[in-house]
Image (cartoon, rainbow, N blue to C red; front, side, top):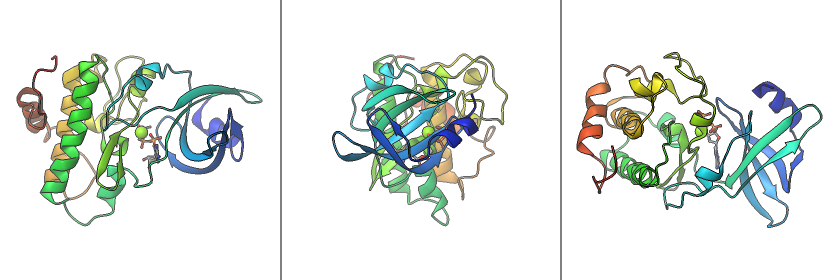
Length: 237
Ligand SMILES: Nc1ncnc2c1ncn2[C@@H]1O[C@H](COP(=O)(O)OP(=O)(O)OP(=O)(O)O)[C@@H](O)[C@H]1O
Ligand SMILES: [Mg+2]
């Protein structure tokens, strides 16, 4: 089963108690749909994934800057099993979209505000022994200026081994990826490296278009060693 098969099979359908209404995004691994929870009568976001994933790890994380997982399940379609996770529907778009919508850099204060929220979420997850593995602006959703980190651990679940730089191989997005993670050896510092690349992008680049693999290394290292954006430096290395 590939993502295009998933895309063709779902318009208007119901997965469990979730009635899919409108496709709101397409990532490297699947689609995100606006849906109605037919029991609670509220709007939710449903992410379709190409494989069965263990969403329990992400569901166990509770933090103000981590988007909670409401539910997950499997739906037997005609020719395939569709796996999905259900999250709150966040109306403000992603930080990636926010960057695309501005001309030039974000105001520094705003950039630091987002970075700090993301860093707090990452620190918390690390304190629970959970790696994110795909830290990037597209996985930071915004409700006004409140940031929610999303897609926790999904990259890992789809990882096979070493991946090619410059491709999206379902193992994390390579522009933001630490060298050791690209070799299949992600560690806590790899998430902080990725946050360092995001910091470089927010504070130094004109546009979200990245080719900063080399340029970002010094700042990523500064984040890794100096905990530049975190309040508590006692998290494990
Ligand atoms: N809970 C949500 N509420 C509202 N919109 C969302 C939600 N989750 C995702 N989206 C939208 O769907 C888009 C696609 O998300 P998705 O996670 O599939 O792709 P991605 O983050 O760009 O790439 P990747 O597959 O590497 O995670 C996001 O950029 C965002 O605009
Ligand atoms: Mg994502």
